[in-house]
Image (cartoon, rainbow, N blue to C red; front, top):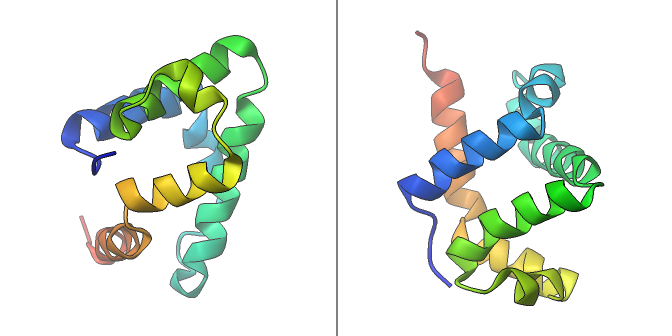
Length: 108
């Protein structure tokens, strides 16, 4: 298992387009910085709801297989709690929270 790299982030952006996550993110109240955990959970659940077809599941498994350094079939059979722990290892929630808070504070 390894940390996310720029290629993973770009793959996540491509995957988010397939999963129509822009629509989901636009519906979230990103101004409420006190509730970032809720925003993250809402976005994650929306992503999982999109993975209802086998093709979309394979897309998600393929994306996760890279940072998890696992075969797609291994990832598919992984215990959900272990998957959640693994996600926390490859992308520190604290670091991502700080990144997104600073991005929200940036005025373009």
